[in-house]
Image (cartoon, rainbow, N blue to C red; front, side, top):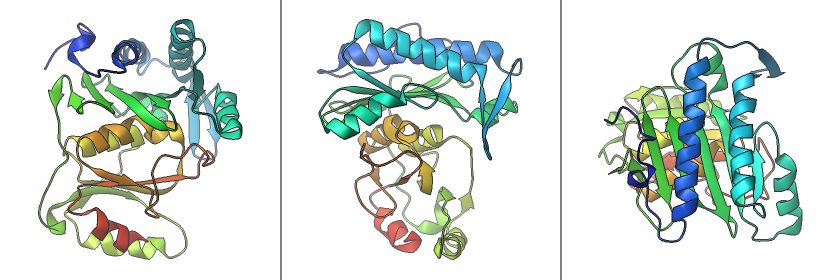
Length: 279
């Protein structure tokens, strides 16, 4: 594994149509990752953002880094991110236009990061004509960069990855964040049928792990937003996973409100069975 995945970004992803944008996204993800590691376990400020969420100065610094670079290079593109810039997505929803939109989670897994748990990442996606066309998820703790493009394969540090294809449910390793009326009981029943359940605290990185076979299934019934899944959902899809919302509808829809997204990603062999078990 390379010690510096930012050394040659051209090796990490390929896209005939979006090559320049993909190279920029990879470079910015590596820059943000270095910033995250410089301040890891050295945070000066942690603020409560909600009952179960926090934000740090690193979230804001990484978001500003990406936003400024994107707007400098592509000033007509929209920008939609977790901490700032949400107004652009609102404009896209209202207009219904095929405007290009960069969708960014500057630090997915902030609670992990703030508590010194080494499972977090930066996620950058570009959507065009209402769908993601490229996605980059970078884990600075492991120097791993996951990349996907609508016209290319999914890669991890430049090497092709594929979703796992275990034959039986009893061998699966999954993450099931499923709640709501009637769903908790279904989740318990599903967990009894699989090998192991793990909850990691970063949607984008867990979805990327589905893409490379470390996890077999990722399911979350609510609470997600576009920035949680835009990049990693595409990466998982291009790696061979079947990705939908938890009701079976398309997983990516910018008309869906923030925190109202859901996701189920699994190998084609098991997706239908999991969808039936969880809905």
